[in-house]
Length: 455
Image (tube, rainbow, N blue to C red; front, side, top):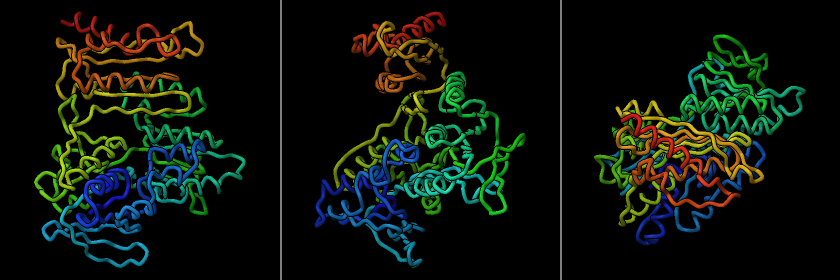
């Protein structure tokens, strides 16, 4: 049984069904929304008009799952877990009625919820979080209602991945976009010096980015709809507001049932994705914490890549097979218009938090040989442990061809390579694809020198 019909939950159900037929294993999946197995990561590109949706964002519909003997129940919200009785209480959102359903094995895949602070006006019409396909459609409905206005003004609150991606989407829709960020620089997943490059690029695109702007309230007009966003220092007119302040693990049900959670509120599991202390409960996706292979600590990293892998592991184990999820190094990529943003491993403050001594280097390079047409600039920042030279983290900001270079560093981090070993890697080279020294290796060579100088 699976509460949650998105990436982790339905990946688990599908993998279990591959291994066990319907006569051997009955699978029931409860989903409170209208869709299953969809790409939440694609919502900004749907809103921005780059891809069609919502159907194009659905990998497998409820009907397709049902055809494989997975009993998908839409608009069904699990409201209580009775772990001792091995049953869950489910509310039918259409009728309002509730009932109990028993289980032998439970998979919790409740995902994450957008951060939505208790501010005056936060629930006003025109204020949107963006987490599900239903959220995306609601935002598009609002944009459609505003499209006839002479001025179309959007305010995005928060400048993380969702914030910058939604800023691009709204810009593509012809809106005047202001991004309000509590921190001084956008993209807190980067160090501030790299975030500043993103800030400068966003300004260059015509997106107004305001740092140090803590929102105090949402102002509404006589019709009750949003009209502006207020900070301590100013008011920013808005016809639509998008909340991009990140997400938190959706673990209220699990916590109420007494299941263990970590520092960030995510469920704690073992390597098999089994919830610690429970033989019959597994959890995966954005509602769990996972091991950071670089720092050695548990972290909450909500990404579809991890969720799908969790589901594969859980499905195998639920069906009587065997699988493990060893952990992550924190790799993520994004873009705002033509600017590509990537990171993996630790930031400076992450390394400091776990007591690592390190050196940092930053280099400027290009995506191709400098003389080859289309060579685009990129900035690479690298962290390495002092004395050992172990690679700790890489951040990249640049144009075409920048973001996916972080995969080199992700593999190196997973393998525990030193910067000297990274510099010696036999990477592919031809002028249309890279300089003779790949930008990541240029940074690694400089890091080798810094490690030796630090002693």
